[in-house]
Image (cartoon, rainbow, N blue to C red; front, top):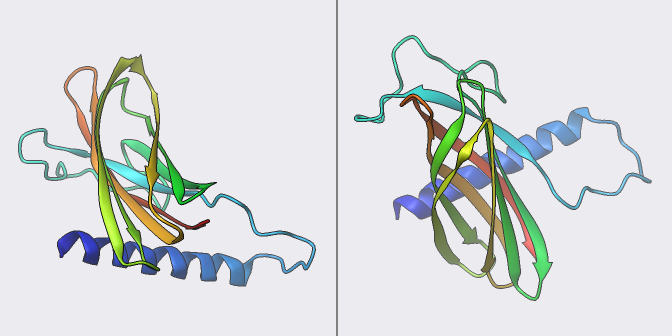
Length: 168
């Protein structure tokens, strides 16, 4: 129940943001809607044991946090398949491990699931991953959560980037 509520809240955020951005952007009958929408969410420094935000560290604005950013795209692959493109960028050091969950919900069919991942990599400021899933056809919303471990022991939280698209 928590996961479904969380995903539905994320959908409301995405729809509200899309409507807000659409209302302030230029109107043009010749500008097609982008095939992939991209939302960037902040990451903040958290305590590696308690997973609570470290005191005195707060997000900087809407898109970026003190630790960097994270993003999630959903790409329509056709045939009921979605490709989830997950990414993170650290401004606090090199990423060596990412633990993530992508909660997705086909709101047309009422079907949901979670993609669970853990990825070790050579030290880099950037992390990128792809997951393909059969989500059935319909409107799919997804939200990512998780943690990013950096060289030196710092841990950052992925703060729920979301995306929404129609899978055919």
